[in-house]
Length: 263
Ligand SMILES: Nc1ncnc2c1ncn2[C@@H]1O[C@H](COP(=O)(O)OP(=O)(O)OP(=O)(O)O)[C@@H](O)[C@H]1O
Image 1: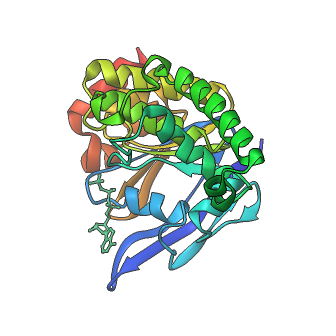
Image 2 (image 1 turned 180 degrees about the vertical axis):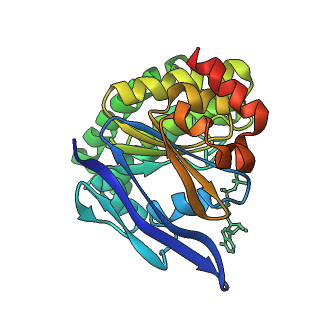
């Protein structure tokens, strides 16, 4: 099976300091790949390059064989790559449904102007996107709260809302930056199940996450960064036994979680 997303020698420097250096790996369709590493290793910077927020100073990104390096995020979304952010990016005063519809609109061909003018085609389109937004909320277990303001929801629910909004772009690959950060154990379990379900439906997932229990349980493949460089990659069990990875990141605690997740 050929790769869906190819990261080829990607790197970037800020003011002469290299944040990410010559990182390469691939993600196949429907596969869950996680990028792990200590704080400041370059994980979010890598995501920002892949998702078109930063222009890399070296290397290329390809989606389905076509080069997409430094392409604007809305064009990437149309090609099937969407992402969530480490910090919540929801609109508190809007309902959950409206929050998802904002994501859906990015994918629509008709412009904002026809919406503002309230043209019939646009009204029909709005109805259609409300229906699909409701279906997406159901997919993340939030359909009962569709008409509640986002600010009234728990943190874990809002993390799932963000995933629903990213799914509104009908991605082939979804980049999730710390989807379980700040979540309690129950919320993390829900996120864990949701990610696995999305991947089963054929959407590839590229994940940055510090919760090693979650990472080890759901990932097919791990990429380990340290000081901007890839120091290891492979199956979770393999990576967990790599002395360099243990020294740089996992330590004894993380390794125990891996062995536990395997068992
Ligand atoms: N816009 C920027 N300007 C300058 N330096 C930056 C910028 N973005 C990131 N960096 C630097 O790049 C390095 C990698 O940071 P990054 O946030 O990617 O790490 P991370 O692995 O995501 O860390 P964490 O786990 O804490 O989220 C850090 O030294 C950071 O200070």
